Amino acid sequence: MRTVYLLASFAGLGLTVVPAFLVWSGHLPWSTHAVLMAVGTVLWFATAPAWMHDKRKPA
Image (cartoon, rainbow, N blue to C red; front, side, top):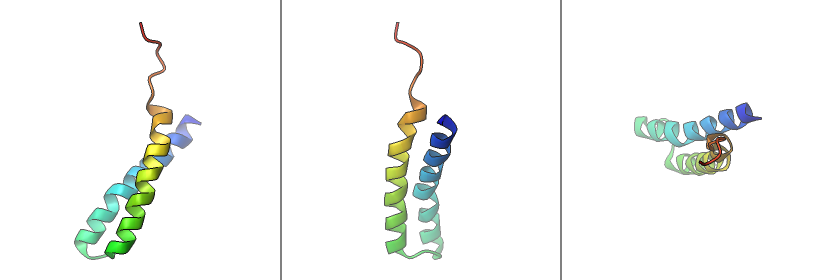
């Protein structure tokens, strides 16, 4: 399950980075960019904590 969360979170991270470059290069309209960035941000924040937490117990 950790692998699924890892892949989903990196997909979300990609959706927050790649559209910015596509808008900059003129291949993507701003409205599509905004939707993709919002989806990517929600996906990242929903899945990243599932695999980023420290499994060690505090001392």
